[in-house]
Amino acid sequence: MQINQSSLALIEQFAEQWQQHWGMFTPDASLAVSPDVFEKAWATYTQRLMGNYPFHHPRYAGQMLKPPHPVAMLGYMAAMFINPNNHALDGGPPTSEMEKEVIKQLTAMFNLPHNTLGHLTSSGTIANLEALWVANKLHPNKKIAFSADAHYTHERICSVLGIETIKIPTNNNGTIDTNVLADLLQTDTIGTVVATAGTTGLGMVDAINELLTLQKTYPFRIHVDAAYGGFFRLLADDEQYLGVAAQSFRAIAHCNSVVIDPHKHGLQPYGCGCVLFSDPNVGRFYQHDSPYTYFTSNELHLGEISLECSRAGAAAGALWLTLQCIPLKADTGLGAVLKQCITAAQNWAKLLDNNSNWQLFIEPQLDIIAYFPKAKSTAEVDELSYQIFDTAMNASPTESVFVSLYNVDATILAQKFGIEANTKRCRILRSALLKPEHAQYVPYLHQQLSHILHKLQNNYGR
Ligand SMILES: Cc1ncc(COP(=O)(O)O)c(C=O)c1O
Image 1: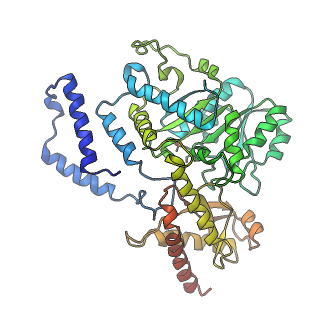
Image 2: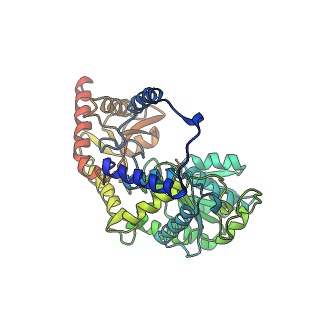
Image 3: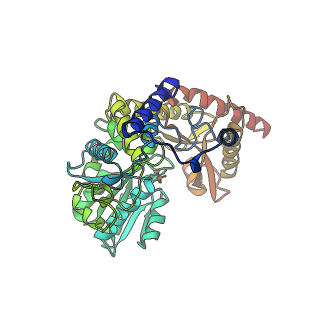
């Protein structure tokens, strides 16, 4: 499936059908744009867009960025002719219905209770904000704890909400140290623990099953930030792909709230996050008066259970259409896509492991890998990593390779790999393999980076 003339013709047909259904009218002259003006602006616009990095290409393995699936694009474009607003049923009954249906599908994917309350949001940040806002309503004077590797959004959200936080160190597999957490829970000052199912930096999954065990002794909430990793739940019914992380994904079924971002691994355009609450009674915190909306139906209006007002109905429509075509299944649909991504990470890890030039930083759990060129000191690792990152992305447009950098504590890196620590921090390389095509491209990416490293080593006379 591609965006081409015949798929764009579907959009045109739909737009005509929609407009003719309600009768044609003449747009006001004030909205007219002269063809010359448009042509010039369009040329500049598209030329400026060309300045982007090639997020769609398998040679791009930098950040968690990729274009939406063509099905999602078509779904979004068709809905844009209507521009429904999923705040209230007054603003878009069909896409609100679709939103409720996809919420049920995501609820089922996580095995959460059938009556789980949830909605889409504009982003993972807003979804997490809602979850922590609810958490604080339930445990007003208590702290929110998260690991040192949790997304920075939690610290910022808590600062916005005026909630005290506590950062729990990670152990050497990059996940929350549950022993330190257990000691802190004894002080009865922690109301909520945020577990990350797929850290942004390294793709590591906190031991959520261990948090559930602790919850039997201490009365705290568990919120899971699965913004990036949530869809890997599809592969968690056996350990084949996810190893120990499978248990954590299965444990999400018993947690209090979960965030997942369809605009990361759900093939959607930006503007599609999601929050789910296993106890629908938390809906009471959202109660508010709206003298302008909620008139067209006595059914639930999504604005009654979300903090945002206007939200793109097109985002719900695009997700609904995508899940009809690429369903939430393990062996086909989205599961098949994610298997390719995991395979890409595992295969690259094998190429890096036991390699005389490269060091794998940590065994990958999902589809992010971190690695660095072998060197005697952290200063050298830092410099070489930066040079590789910079040289790879500045090659010709058909040969450039895009990876990212990850900033780690130099002392920890030095201790772990037996090199000299002569800096405080140290940049290493990181690749986010979020496209299934990466499975094919890993040997090429590895070869290109190795080639650059080889040249740099020769230049430095190493
Ligand atoms: C684990 C995690 N949580 C939250 C966020 C923030 O989500 P968003 O960028 O959709 O606001 C991200 C973004 O990368 C993330 O990886």
